[in-house]
Image 1 (cartoon, rainbow over the protein chains, first blue to last red):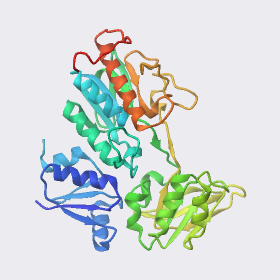
Image 2 (cartoon, helix red, strand yellow):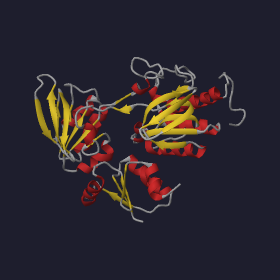
Image 3 (cartoon, chains in turn yellow, red):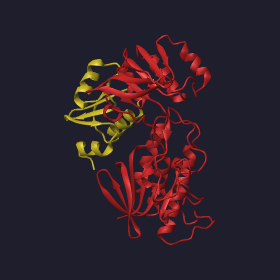
Image 4 (cartoon, rainbow over the protein chains, first blue to last red):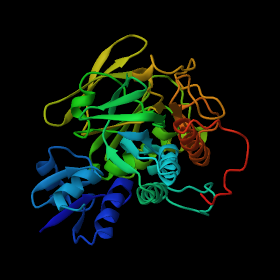
Length: 77
Length: 313
Protein backbone atom coordinates (compact mmCIF):
# COMPACT_ATOMS: atom_id res chain seq x y z
CA UNK A 1 0.00 0.00 0.00
CA UNK A 2 1.35 3.45 -0.89
CA UNK A 3 0.20 6.32 1.22
CA UNK A 4 1.09 9.95 0.66
CA UNK A 5 0.17 12.88 2.87
CA UNK A 6 0.38 16.26 1.17
CA UNK A 7 0.76 18.87 3.88
CA UNK A 8 2.29 22.12 5.03
CA UNK A 9 4.36 22.52 8.18
CA UNK A 10 2.21 24.88 10.24
CA UNK A 11 -1.13 23.29 9.34
CA UNK A 12 -2.68 21.74 12.46
CA UNK A 13 -5.06 19.46 10.56
CA UNK A 14 -2.06 18.03 8.68
CA UNK A 15 -0.40 17.17 11.99
CA UNK A 16 -3.62 15.53 13.15
CA UNK A 17 -3.78 13.31 10.05
CA UNK A 18 -0.12 12.31 10.42
CA UNK A 19 -0.50 11.63 14.15
CA UNK A 20 -3.51 9.44 13.40
CA UNK A 21 -1.53 7.41 10.85
CA UNK A 22 1.46 7.06 13.18
CA UNK A 23 -0.77 5.95 16.04
CA UNK A 24 -2.15 3.21 13.83
CA UNK A 25 1.31 2.12 12.66
CA UNK A 26 0.60 3.16 9.10
CA UNK A 27 3.68 4.04 7.06
CA UNK A 28 3.34 7.05 4.81
CA UNK A 29 5.30 9.51 2.73
CA UNK A 30 5.11 13.03 4.14
CA UNK A 31 5.21 15.63 1.37
CA UNK A 32 5.58 19.33 2.16
CA UNK A 33 3.79 21.11 -0.70
CA UNK A 34 5.10 24.51 0.35
CA UNK A 35 8.63 23.52 -0.71
CA UNK A 36 7.89 20.82 -3.29
CA UNK A 37 6.09 22.56 -6.15
CA UNK A 38 5.82 19.53 -8.34
CA UNK A 39 4.06 17.71 -5.55
CA UNK A 40 1.79 20.71 -5.03
CA UNK A 41 0.65 20.45 -8.66
CA UNK A 42 0.20 16.72 -8.26
CA UNK A 43 -1.96 17.26 -5.19
CA UNK A 44 -4.12 19.88 -6.91
CA UNK A 45 -4.59 17.62 -9.90
CA UNK A 46 -5.49 14.60 -7.81
CA UNK A 47 -7.87 16.33 -5.43
CA UNK A 48 -9.31 19.05 -7.66
CA UNK A 49 -8.67 21.61 -4.94
CA UNK A 50 -5.79 23.38 -3.23
CA UNK A 51 -6.42 22.91 0.49
CA UNK A 52 -4.22 20.76 2.74
CA UNK A 53 -4.06 18.10 4.05
CA UNK A 54 -4.71 15.67 1.21
CA UNK A 55 -4.13 11.96 1.84
CA UNK A 56 -3.69 9.55 -1.06
CA UNK A 57 -4.29 5.95 -0.06
CA UNK A 58 -3.72 3.73 -3.08
CA UNK A 59 -5.40 6.32 -5.27
CA UNK A 60 -8.25 7.06 -2.87
CA UNK A 61 -8.12 10.78 -2.14
CA UNK A 62 -9.14 12.09 1.26
CA UNK A 63 -9.34 15.83 1.78
CA UNK A 64 -8.93 17.25 5.30
CA UNK A 65 -8.84 15.56 8.69
CA UNK A 66 -11.60 13.02 8.17
CA UNK A 67 -11.00 10.10 10.53
CA UNK A 68 -13.93 8.05 9.27
CA UNK A 69 -12.76 8.27 5.66
CA UNK A 70 -9.19 7.43 6.71
CA UNK A 71 -10.37 4.45 8.75
CA UNK A 72 -12.51 3.16 5.89
CA UNK A 73 -9.74 3.51 3.34
CA UNK A 74 -7.24 1.82 5.66
CA UNK A 75 -9.74 -0.76 6.91
CA UNK A 76 -9.06 0.18 10.53
CA UNK A 77 -11.85 -0.48 13.03
CA UNK B 1 -31.06 4.93 20.27
CA UNK B 2 -28.57 7.12 22.11
CA UNK B 3 -28.96 8.38 25.66
CA UNK B 4 -27.36 11.61 24.56
CA UNK B 5 -26.27 13.22 21.33
CA UNK B 6 -23.73 15.99 21.68
CA UNK B 7 -23.48 18.39 18.76
CA UNK B 8 -20.00 19.85 18.51
CA UNK B 9 -16.49 18.51 19.11
CA UNK B 10 -14.70 21.36 20.82
CA UNK B 11 -13.75 21.61 24.51
CA UNK B 12 -17.41 21.81 25.60
CA UNK B 13 -18.68 18.89 23.51
CA UNK B 14 -15.72 16.59 24.14
CA UNK B 15 -15.77 17.31 27.88
CA UNK B 16 -19.52 16.63 27.98
CA UNK B 17 -18.86 13.36 26.11
CA UNK B 18 -16.22 12.29 28.64
CA UNK B 19 -18.67 12.84 31.50
CA UNK B 20 -21.73 11.20 29.89
CA UNK B 21 -19.72 8.16 28.73
CA UNK B 22 -18.20 7.70 32.16
CA UNK B 23 -21.75 7.71 33.56
CA UNK B 24 -22.50 4.83 31.16
CA UNK B 25 -24.71 6.90 28.91
CA UNK B 26 -24.67 5.75 25.28
CA UNK B 27 -23.06 8.83 23.78
CA UNK B 28 -22.74 10.11 20.23
CA UNK B 29 -20.77 13.25 19.39
CA UNK B 30 -21.62 14.68 15.97
CA UNK B 31 -19.60 17.52 14.54
CA UNK B 32 -18.59 19.08 11.27
CA UNK B 33 -15.00 19.08 12.52
CA UNK B 34 -12.87 19.60 15.61
CA UNK B 35 -12.98 23.08 17.14
CA UNK B 36 -11.42 25.30 14.51
CA UNK B 37 -10.72 27.99 17.08
CA UNK B 38 -8.70 25.75 19.38
CA UNK B 39 -7.05 23.77 16.57
CA UNK B 40 -5.74 26.94 14.96
CA UNK B 41 -4.35 28.39 18.20
CA UNK B 42 -0.55 28.04 17.91
CA UNK B 43 -0.10 27.84 21.69
CA UNK B 44 -2.42 27.67 24.69
CA UNK B 45 -0.95 28.88 27.99
CA UNK B 46 -4.03 29.06 30.21
CA UNK B 47 -5.46 25.55 30.29
CA UNK B 48 -4.67 24.14 33.75
CA UNK B 49 -2.52 21.03 33.70
CA UNK B 50 -0.65 22.12 30.60
CA UNK B 51 1.97 24.80 31.10
CA UNK B 52 2.06 25.26 27.34
CA UNK B 53 0.41 23.18 24.63
CA UNK B 54 -0.40 23.53 20.93
CA UNK B 55 -4.11 24.02 20.29
CA UNK B 56 -4.43 20.98 18.05
CA UNK B 57 -2.63 18.78 20.57
CA UNK B 58 -5.05 19.79 23.29
CA UNK B 59 -8.01 18.90 21.08
CA UNK B 60 -6.38 15.59 20.08
CA UNK B 61 -6.01 14.69 23.76
CA UNK B 62 -9.62 15.62 24.50
CA UNK B 63 -10.78 13.61 21.48
CA UNK B 64 -8.78 10.57 22.58
CA UNK B 65 -10.09 10.89 26.12
CA UNK B 66 -13.70 11.08 24.90
CA UNK B 67 -13.25 8.02 22.66
CA UNK B 68 -11.48 6.08 25.42
CA UNK B 69 -14.35 6.88 27.78
CA UNK B 70 -16.71 5.25 25.30
CA UNK B 71 -18.10 8.11 23.23
CA UNK B 72 -18.68 7.57 19.53
CA UNK B 73 -17.59 10.47 17.33
CA UNK B 74 -18.99 11.05 13.85
CA UNK B 75 -17.97 13.84 11.50
CA UNK B 76 -21.19 15.04 9.92
CA UNK B 77 -22.94 18.39 9.80
CA UNK B 78 -26.27 18.57 11.63
CA UNK B 79 -28.99 20.37 9.72
CA UNK B 80 -32.09 19.78 11.80
CA UNK B 81 -33.31 18.64 15.21
CA UNK B 82 -36.84 17.28 15.42
CA UNK B 83 -38.99 15.66 18.09
CA UNK B 84 -40.43 12.16 18.28
CA UNK B 85 -42.60 11.86 21.37
CA UNK B 86 -40.31 12.47 24.33
CA UNK B 87 -37.22 11.74 22.21
CA UNK B 88 -35.33 13.73 19.62
CA UNK B 89 -34.30 13.08 16.04
CA UNK B 90 -31.00 14.61 14.97
CA UNK B 91 -30.68 14.88 11.20
CA UNK B 92 -27.36 15.38 9.51
CA UNK B 93 -26.97 15.82 5.78
CA UNK B 94 -26.25 12.07 5.56
CA UNK B 95 -28.10 10.29 8.40
CA UNK B 96 -30.70 10.39 11.14
CA UNK B 97 -30.13 9.54 14.81
CA UNK B 98 -32.56 9.18 17.70
CA UNK B 99 -31.75 10.16 21.27
CA UNK B 100 -33.23 10.89 24.67
CA UNK B 101 -31.26 14.05 25.46
CA UNK B 102 -29.24 16.59 23.53
CA UNK B 103 -26.27 18.77 24.38
CA UNK B 104 -25.67 21.71 22.05
CA UNK B 105 -21.96 22.55 22.06
CA UNK B 106 -21.09 23.60 18.53
CA UNK B 107 -19.49 26.93 19.41
CA UNK B 108 -19.01 29.63 16.86
CA UNK B 109 -18.55 29.22 13.12
CA UNK B 110 -16.04 31.11 10.97
CA UNK B 111 -18.03 33.81 9.22
CA UNK B 112 -18.60 33.56 5.47
CA UNK B 113 -18.96 36.54 3.18
CA UNK B 114 -22.01 34.88 1.63
CA UNK B 115 -21.38 36.21 -1.86
CA UNK B 116 -21.49 34.66 -5.33
CA UNK B 117 -18.89 32.00 -6.04
CA UNK B 118 -17.64 31.69 -2.46
CA UNK B 119 -19.03 28.22 -1.77
CA UNK B 120 -18.08 26.84 -5.18
CA UNK B 121 -14.50 28.09 -4.95
CA UNK B 122 -13.82 27.21 -1.31
CA UNK B 123 -10.64 25.12 -1.26
CA UNK B 124 -10.10 26.12 -4.88
CA UNK B 125 -8.56 29.49 -4.16
CA UNK B 126 -10.86 30.66 -1.37
CA UNK B 127 -9.58 29.69 2.10
CA UNK B 128 -10.24 30.29 5.78
CA UNK B 129 -6.97 28.99 7.28
CA UNK B 130 -3.96 31.03 6.28
CA UNK B 131 -1.40 29.00 8.26
CA UNK B 132 -2.65 25.81 6.54
CA UNK B 133 -3.09 26.90 2.97
CA UNK B 134 -1.00 30.06 2.74
CA UNK B 135 2.35 28.34 2.09
CA UNK B 136 1.02 27.05 -1.24
CA UNK B 137 1.00 30.60 -2.59
CA UNK B 138 4.72 31.27 -2.70
CA UNK B 139 5.42 34.09 -5.17
CA UNK B 140 1.73 34.31 -6.09
CA UNK B 141 -0.80 37.12 -5.80
CA UNK B 142 -3.26 36.84 -2.93
CA UNK B 143 -5.91 38.86 -1.14
CA UNK B 144 -6.84 38.89 2.54
CA UNK B 145 -10.32 40.08 3.49
CA UNK B 146 -11.07 41.57 6.90
CA UNK B 147 -10.17 44.33 9.33
CA UNK B 148 -9.50 42.69 12.68
CA UNK B 149 -6.42 41.20 14.24
CA UNK B 150 -6.76 37.86 12.46
CA UNK B 151 -6.88 39.60 9.06
CA UNK B 152 -3.84 41.69 9.98
CA UNK B 153 -1.92 38.62 11.16
CA UNK B 154 -2.85 36.81 7.95
CA UNK B 155 -1.62 39.74 5.86
CA UNK B 156 1.65 39.92 7.73
CA UNK B 157 2.11 36.13 7.37
CA UNK B 158 1.34 36.15 3.63
CA UNK B 159 3.60 39.15 2.95
CA UNK B 160 6.54 36.88 3.67
CA UNK B 161 5.34 34.18 1.27
CA UNK B 162 3.43 35.77 -1.59
CA UNK B 163 4.64 38.14 -4.27
CA UNK B 164 1.80 40.56 -3.61
CA UNK B 165 -0.85 40.81 -0.88
CA UNK B 166 -3.99 42.94 -1.14
CA UNK B 167 -5.69 43.66 2.17
CA UNK B 168 -9.34 44.35 1.44
CA UNK B 169 -11.44 45.96 4.17
CA UNK B 170 -14.92 47.48 4.07
CA UNK B 171 -14.05 50.44 6.32
CA UNK B 172 -11.24 52.98 6.20
CA UNK B 173 -9.79 52.01 9.56
CA UNK B 174 -8.90 48.72 11.22
CA UNK B 175 -10.28 47.16 14.39
CA UNK B 176 -6.95 45.39 15.00
CA UNK B 177 -3.92 46.65 16.89
CA UNK B 178 -2.52 49.90 15.51
CA UNK B 179 1.07 48.75 15.95
CA UNK B 180 0.40 45.79 13.64
CA UNK B 181 -1.23 48.07 11.06
CA UNK B 182 1.85 50.31 11.12
CA UNK B 183 4.11 47.29 10.69
CA UNK B 184 2.12 46.04 7.69
CA UNK B 185 2.20 49.51 6.09
CA UNK B 186 5.97 49.13 5.90
CA UNK B 187 5.74 45.95 3.82
CA UNK B 188 6.46 46.84 0.22
CA UNK B 189 4.40 44.00 -1.23
CA UNK B 190 1.20 44.83 0.70
CA UNK B 191 -1.44 47.09 -0.78
CA UNK B 192 -4.48 48.29 1.18
CA UNK B 193 -7.83 48.40 -0.60
CA UNK B 194 -10.14 50.19 1.84
CA UNK B 195 -13.84 51.08 1.86
CA UNK B 196 -14.26 48.10 -0.40
CA UNK B 197 -16.19 44.84 -0.31
CA UNK B 198 -15.91 41.68 -2.39
CA UNK B 199 -19.20 41.01 -4.21
CA UNK B 200 -18.18 37.99 -6.26
CA UNK B 201 -15.51 35.31 -6.55
CA UNK B 202 -14.86 34.36 -10.17
CA UNK B 203 -13.14 31.38 -11.71
CA UNK B 204 -14.00 28.04 -13.27
CA UNK B 205 -11.93 25.25 -11.77
CA UNK B 206 -9.98 27.62 -9.54
CA UNK B 207 -10.28 31.21 -8.35
CA UNK B 208 -9.19 33.76 -10.93
CA UNK B 209 -10.47 37.12 -9.80
CA UNK B 210 -12.51 39.06 -7.27
CA UNK B 211 -15.18 41.58 -8.14
CA UNK B 212 -14.73 44.52 -5.77
CA UNK B 213 -17.20 47.27 -4.98
CA UNK B 214 -16.34 50.58 -3.40
CA UNK B 215 -18.84 51.14 -0.56
CA UNK B 216 -18.97 54.91 -1.12
CA UNK B 217 -19.39 55.36 -4.88
CA UNK B 218 -20.52 51.76 -5.68
CA UNK B 219 -17.91 51.58 -8.43
CA UNK B 220 -16.92 48.04 -9.38
CA UNK B 221 -13.64 46.62 -10.55
CA UNK B 222 -11.99 43.23 -11.11
CA UNK B 223 -8.91 42.17 -9.20
CA UNK B 224 -6.83 39.22 -10.49
CA UNK B 225 -5.65 36.98 -7.66
CA UNK B 226 -4.47 33.38 -7.27
CA UNK B 227 -5.78 32.96 -3.75
CA UNK B 228 -7.96 34.67 -1.21
CA UNK B 229 -8.12 34.31 2.58
CA UNK B 230 -11.29 35.28 4.40
CA UNK B 231 -10.62 36.47 7.95
CA UNK B 232 -13.80 38.18 9.10
CA UNK B 233 -14.27 36.59 12.50
CA UNK B 234 -16.84 34.11 13.68
CA UNK B 235 -20.56 34.03 14.46
CA UNK B 236 -23.06 31.89 16.36
CA UNK B 237 -25.17 29.99 13.87
CA UNK B 238 -28.24 28.89 15.80
CA UNK B 239 -31.00 29.61 13.27
CA UNK B 240 -31.62 25.90 12.64
CA UNK B 241 -32.80 25.49 16.26
CA UNK B 242 -34.65 28.79 16.57
CA UNK B 243 -38.04 27.14 17.18
CA UNK B 244 -36.65 24.75 19.77
CA UNK B 245 -34.68 26.77 22.33
CA UNK B 246 -34.69 30.41 23.42
CA UNK B 247 -31.83 32.61 22.23
CA UNK B 248 -30.68 36.08 23.23
CA UNK B 249 -30.53 39.05 20.87
CA UNK B 250 -27.09 37.98 19.61
CA UNK B 251 -28.34 34.44 18.82
CA UNK B 252 -26.53 32.82 21.78
CA UNK B 253 -28.52 29.99 23.38
CA UNK B 254 -29.86 31.05 26.77
CA UNK B 255 -28.99 28.62 29.59
CA UNK B 256 -29.32 28.66 33.37
CA UNK B 257 -26.50 27.75 35.75
CA UNK B 258 -27.26 24.04 35.22
CA UNK B 259 -26.74 24.36 31.45
CA UNK B 260 -30.45 23.80 30.84
CA UNK B 261 -32.01 25.49 27.80
CA UNK B 262 -35.65 26.52 27.58
CA UNK B 263 -36.49 23.03 26.25
CA UNK B 264 -36.58 20.05 28.67
CA UNK B 265 -33.97 17.46 27.74
CA UNK B 266 -31.88 19.89 25.70
CA UNK B 267 -28.75 21.26 27.35
CA UNK B 268 -26.09 23.59 26.00
CA UNK B 269 -22.50 24.49 26.86
CA UNK B 270 -19.56 26.57 25.70
CA UNK B 271 -19.23 29.39 23.21
CA UNK B 272 -22.66 28.80 21.70
CA UNK B 273 -24.34 29.84 24.97
CA UNK B 274 -24.84 33.19 26.66
CA UNK B 275 -22.23 32.28 29.31
CA UNK B 276 -19.62 35.03 29.53
CA UNK B 277 -15.90 34.36 28.86
CA UNK B 278 -15.23 32.37 25.71
CA UNK B 279 -12.33 30.37 27.13
CA UNK B 280 -11.32 26.73 26.66
CA UNK B 281 -11.38 26.00 30.39
CA UNK B 282 -14.80 27.62 30.79
CA UNK B 283 -16.21 25.64 27.86
CA UNK B 284 -14.80 22.38 29.22
CA UNK B 285 -16.28 23.10 32.65
CA UNK B 286 -19.67 23.97 31.21
CA UNK B 287 -19.54 20.80 29.09
CA UNK B 288 -19.02 18.74 32.25
CA UNK B 289 -22.01 20.44 33.87
CA UNK B 290 -24.21 19.82 30.83
CA UNK B 291 -23.15 16.15 30.74
CA UNK B 292 -23.84 15.56 34.42
CA UNK B 293 -27.15 17.32 34.24
CA UNK B 294 -28.21 15.34 31.17
CA UNK B 295 -27.52 12.23 33.27
CA UNK B 296 -29.64 13.57 36.12
CA UNK B 297 -32.47 14.45 33.71
CA UNK B 298 -32.40 10.96 32.19
CA UNK B 299 -32.65 9.33 35.62
CA UNK B 300 -35.16 11.75 37.06
CA UNK B 301 -32.68 13.08 39.62
CA UNK B 302 -33.07 16.64 40.82
CA UNK B 303 -29.67 18.39 40.54
CA UNK B 304 -28.70 19.52 44.01
CA UNK B 305 -25.74 21.34 45.44
CA UNK B 306 -23.94 18.42 47.08
CA UNK B 307 -20.55 16.85 46.47
CA UNK B 308 -20.90 14.31 43.69
CA UNK B 309 -17.41 12.84 43.69
CA UNK B 310 -17.83 10.56 46.70
CA UNK B 311 -18.69 7.45 44.71
CA UNK B 312 -15.40 7.65 42.94
CA UNK B 313 -16.94 8.49 39.58
